[in-house]
Length: 373
Picture 1 (cartoon, one colour):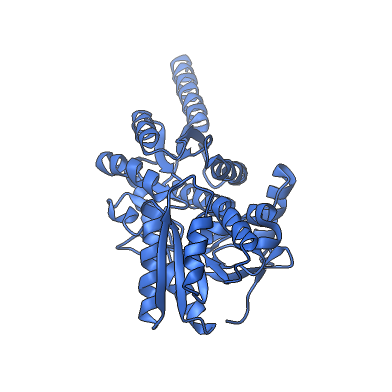
Picture 2 (picture 1 turned 135 degrees about the vertical axis):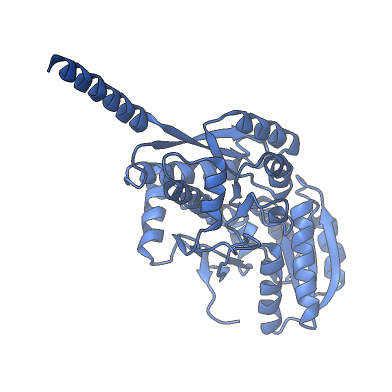
């Protein structure tokens, strides 16, 4: 009897220890983003949204026996920094998947390393067509410029505009945005009057504006971010140029209106996220984000919120013993994830997301949905 009692006590202790170990198991997601430098505002939005989604997940009970943590690293939107972070994340055996980076250039620089070492990577904003072609380990939850460009081209043509000038940032993403729009516009019978590139960090567009205005295009199409977009619109206004502005979804941020004020009135763009969407999930996110961070979330925060949600949902499906390989497989099987940027499903071959875009314009000092052409 005593022997059985001792054996029972030993087994009980072992089971208790195992239960504690399971409960204490920590699964880590790496998140690389620009937290300093010229693009730090995007990294901050990503981190803010990620924290909200992580807390929701860890209190949801979806993953019994483990908790998930996110470790953030500052890439400074620099390819060299991104490669260093990739090696650091790969060396951490607790990290089973990575979210980021911000730009396509930096995401792809890190992605080459993740592809070689088989680490699943999900970018919330890398929209260069070649990103997911790196390997079966790359995913994204944002539409590509190969989709968005022709969509905007159709919109402009439907509005009766036949000629366009394109101003784009000189990097991999900007070139893909240029190519996507130009090919779509020409396919619909439109004419491109000019394509003008500018270097990242540039805020003086006066010479470009003067040159483009001489050709009198029906619209100017902007492939840039909100900081450049606000400066461009202000300088267009100062020069007395009345040519309408259309642009990529990268311009969609409350900061565009805050910086550009009246000069951005009438600017058109398409986006995956609208904070006015009455969907309860969207309104819950908008209210929580605004309460915590004293600002309304834009598309970039929403993209990060959904990217983290998709990754955590895949972790839950893979279970507390998730590995990098099982997480990749769970990500690839994502179908109809109900995010604030719409439902996301990954194509079984290309891993590209299926998304819908909403047409928006700046009117009366805020973004409003466009229901017509």
